[in-house]
Image 1 (cartoon, rainbow, N blue to C red):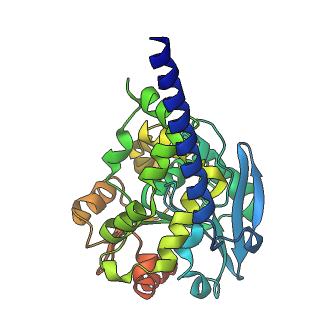
Image 2: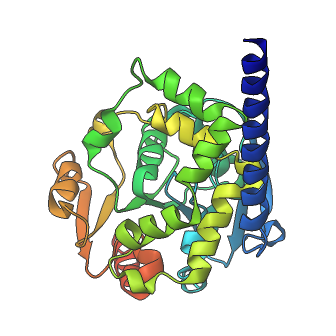
Length: 317
């Protein structure tokens, strides 16, 4: 009996050591190409950690906020930046828990990001910007504007989810999921499987792009690197997202919105029209437009098409 117990603990220790080495290997190889160079930007000291941002161009301020996802970063704006810089002072940031920003061990909540965006606008930009969001980040901008009516001039939301997607709340399983993902070795291993290069490639080709052949190896490398910076501590954000701690209903805020909100939906996305309608039905200040031949990130897939719509909205009085 004692011998069996000894063998069990020996095998357990060996398995843990092997998984740990595999985790370290993933972290090391994911960042070898160093595509997301931190020297290309600056850091803002938020209440919960350092937030990476860039500031380029001159003109009226424009803030670009990427989708909230551990694999995401401000890299997604790289194909539209140069043209936007001609008329705007363009700010991009890596949300806390993403890319080059800190990835602290905490519960990431919707309020955390609402406060982060509010503080960034007030302390770094210093005046009301136009704001462009991708995906689920629209909720942070809308709720931040609802709390502070003088914060922004306009919001442009690229492929936001249906407003009812934000109504999920933590349930009895949320804490279990969160705890499992936060475990030092096993949780990191699960995260590394979820954000393996092949899994990211599948997501980019099936959801982020309408034409999968347009996903370049450099794009894939950038998303893979973002997911595994800082020893794969993006798992803490994923843990909070899996438990729905980052969700918060925005329906009331949309009804009270007193600035223009422009929705851009890609026609390749299932139910694009009903998603756009879920916003426009809330407030007469909400307008919609559609873009063809693009998935979730038209800024990477069809940047010129997207820019023409963005300019139309920004120049609309």
